[in-house]
Image: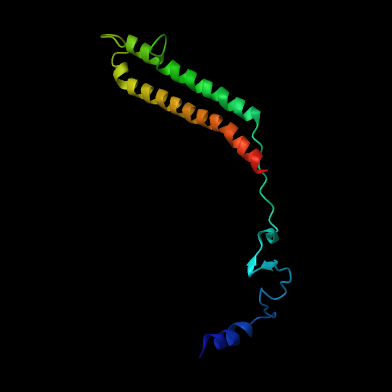
Amino acid sequence: MKFDNLYKQVFLTEQDEEVTSPIEGEEDKAPVEGGVPMPDSYNVEPAPVASPSVGGISDITNYISQLNDFAKAMQNTEGDSLQKLVTDIDRQGSLFMGISREVSSDIIKIASDAKDIATKLEGFVLNSAKRQRDIAAGQ
């Protein structure tokens, strides 16, 4: 027995409602030019583009400076820093003996991560002017 006959006998006869093809009743067809639908006939609206805000840029710039200040406070070669403090208090016989060995690498890693995040954010801030021009040119 062929599949079509089996389908008609089992599936369609057991349905309470008449089954119609999804193509039937479709009267709103896109105009065709040379057998290919024209792009203007898709009835699709472009997605709204959020305009970049100057406030967002200033907020990110503020966080960039905070990250750089934090990295400097963690590991500064000149002046006060956590790294310098840990090195200074790590003396023979002190309560903090061995602290430098334990936390120095962690301090360096955290300061490096903060600088990396700040650098990535700075890249986005620098590229935002170009993106804003591109968005304006596309509209």
